[in-house]
Amino acid sequence: MMKNSIKIIIVDDEILFRKGISFLLDRENNIDVIYEASSGGELLAFLESNHDNHPDIIIMDLKMQGINGVEATKIIHTVYPSIKIIALTSYNTKSFILNMIAVGAVAYLVKNSTPQELLVTINEVAERGYYYTDYIMKVIQEDISTVKKPKCLLDSNFLTTREIQVLKLICDQKSSTEIADALFISPRTVEGHRNNLLLKTESRNIAGLVLFAIQNEIMAID
Figure 1 (cartoon, one colour):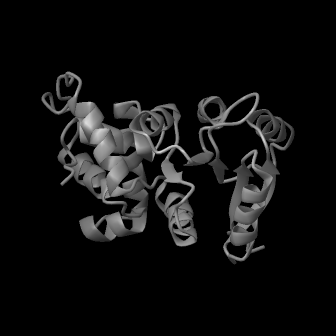
Figure 2: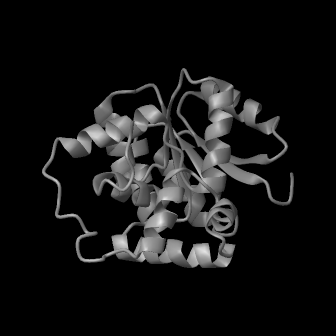
């Protein structure tokens, strides 16, 4: 295990599928699968009893006995907000996607995704905090466009010009270092702006900032 490896938990009630994902990830030098669970209840019990060994990312199936993946994600997003959830499921309907994002998932993959797509998603989530494909972004935008938009929070100088610049680069999935280089500021200053954005928009994570940016037309989806 590398010192800065990405700690992963896989949650799926299909044993063969779960073991296959675990085998795939164990071959990666920067990924460490620390636990496998067959249900949301089993996962929550592990997190409760292993506070010193929490994962960075949980790969979560949706349909499971007992506490399903949706409910487990909702609980983890509230109780352990620093843990990132990647939904990996057979369901690809817009309602499932929007529901998982609403309860806190920072990425969404269907089970017929390629191994490379899974690895890209894990690494992007570890590096950026979220990873939404173009399809997921369009689903979010279409959902927002069907409801009445709230008054744009930018009308009263809600965000500063610099904060908007940082937010746009966050939406482009740039890291703190990349944002700092682009704006000629320090990574620490970027983190300060990021924290201010989270507070001002009442977002719990980077994914929330992206949703805010889409809703307020700061980020456009082609």
